[in-house]
Length: 358
Image (tube, rainbow, N blue to C red):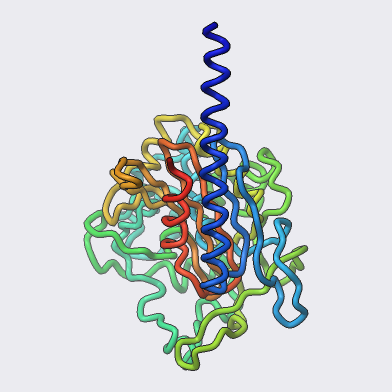
């Protein structure tokens, strides 16, 4: 009798969850139509795919549609992978989060070398001058972006753009700085004696069978990679992205992936298969700027009058817009990958969450 009751309860929960996803699908279709969204959306509940659908074009000129197999530039979702790699090395005793940059990069020339810790790089409180300071759409269109539009190796990026002066006391203020994660990438290389790409592949992509993910470089042609387009405020039009060397974003934003591959990563991360629970607690500890280690963490986030913990990793580089949005207590993940910079994915993901939570 108890077994039968359990089966009935499970069926009830399944039907309820399925009904919520159907409602979410209706909302998504309506939102996409109103807001001209291009991209792929995947929803996971309890590590199972409950919804996946693609919209619009991967290439506007040839009208090539986005599909669930489309590969996207995932921008700063890369930082979540970098954080996991660092924390795995921490668990192995190869990195001390409280040690400074010089402990792992003794030749690092910046003033932060003996003052900024690995932990402060992870939680974006290094206090270093921001490498993208003053970068606006207007300035980029007039002057370009030397740090991204000129070819640089990761070593050159470290020296030229990630070794600037300290402008505030380390640990005192949150400042979203790509330099912090470029330095972390170089620490991974030094500790593992591998390139960042090799470490990423060996420790995460291969074990998780993420066969459609990797690092973007100018030399490599990626199968099914969507072209990206950004909205120019000055002429009120969607245009092709500026030419850049994507590899310059390195450990801070140079990955490509598919929605399905990111679902594998999400399931492994939140399922405790990549890091121990104690380490996950560190990663998901909400600090200054409500930032954890490579992800934003929102405690007491209200959805339908109930409080949840949201772990969120958005990304945006010109037209590449991405979102990994996880509702911790609900066990649900929303992945949104877009190749057009036309929609606020923060608002979109929050609205979807409101539809899938009962």
